[in-house]
Image (cartoon, rainbow, N blue to C red; front, side, top):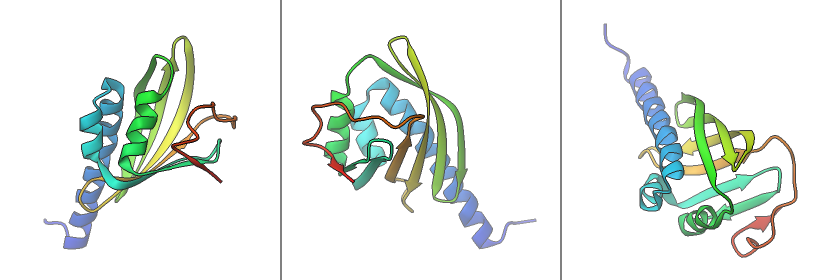
Amino acid sequence: MSLPDATFHAVDRTSMSRQAAQSYVDHLERRDWPGLAALLTDSVVYEMPQTRERIHGVDAFLRFNIEYPGDWHLRLRRVVADGSFAALWLDIRVGVEQQDACVWLEVSEHGLIRKIVDYWPESYDPPLGREHLVERW
């Protein structure tokens, strides 16, 4: 029995979104900036609701991560994908401090990440020094 075309397309998009999500975490953890850039659309949007910050574009997003302070590490606890969306549950460590975060990804029809929404457990004021990369809302 074969899947109807619409069902096959949804399954294919879901697989593509799951793969993009797993690769996203892998490239970030390895600090593989060219590999990470290859996963993103040029116009990627990154949002952090707790600090009301938004970053536009792959170059600013890469710089944000390259300049992020501390010895941070990511471990993927779970990924759930459906069509062009993926949700990640991450174990994030900076030094000895551990936090969980949820990240929502929106993936294009070409398998590139076009939007990232990064939810942290508590609201906080953003650290100084990244005003040149973000807009507040």
